Length: 285
Image 1 (tube, one colour):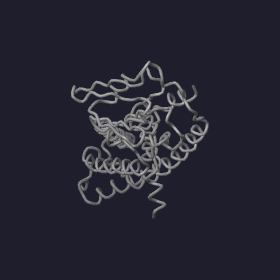
Image 2: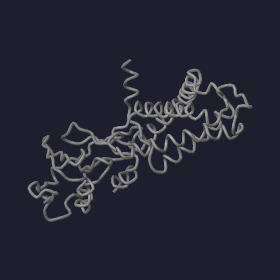
Image 3: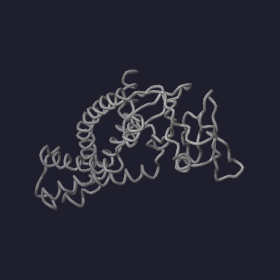
Image 4: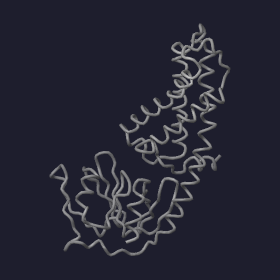
């Protein structure tokens, strides 16, 4: 049981955004069309089809697309949900999507089938179970295969990175930077030579320093990134993380991207998929 739990807790990339979202939607649509037209999960009585076989298959294939689109919009509105995404969360997400698809397939039966028994428990069970079983049988191995592909690829990339002592931090006469925050009373000075990494939590930033010291300040990571743009060793590597490259001790690859182990710290910092190219270029300098 512990092995299964460990397997499900593995980091996994969140794909329900940007270009990847549309690629997934296209694949899901084609798979749904194949499933509905070729496999045909249950017997179809053609005289009861209001839009014919092709029209009915098209409607059933478009429902997953609609569900995935509004699910992606919901997740985009609450980005905190997708932080620290794992294999378990990915599988749960697809289970919820498939459950919604099955329920919608049932709710639209009166629109596409001329059948007095449309609103029966039999058809509710048929639509939901067929969608869940068929969908999970297809989705689960695909996710598992992609997990292993991404894991191997990122492990190879991580092993190719040589972590050395970088001396690029001193760009200005002083490495003590005055940081202005929205609240004048919380303005402070930051010693960049002691900075390990910064992580965002809502409207606050946690500054993690050497010797386990931390500072909590009310400001955005975008604002801090702009202030530190002229310091080449300070790089944003995740939606919620900025790291001091000179403090990296080891780079470890996983299915989501990288995990950075830092000197003088027990914490690890994630490098998300969208920041991998920039990180690789910086580390090769």
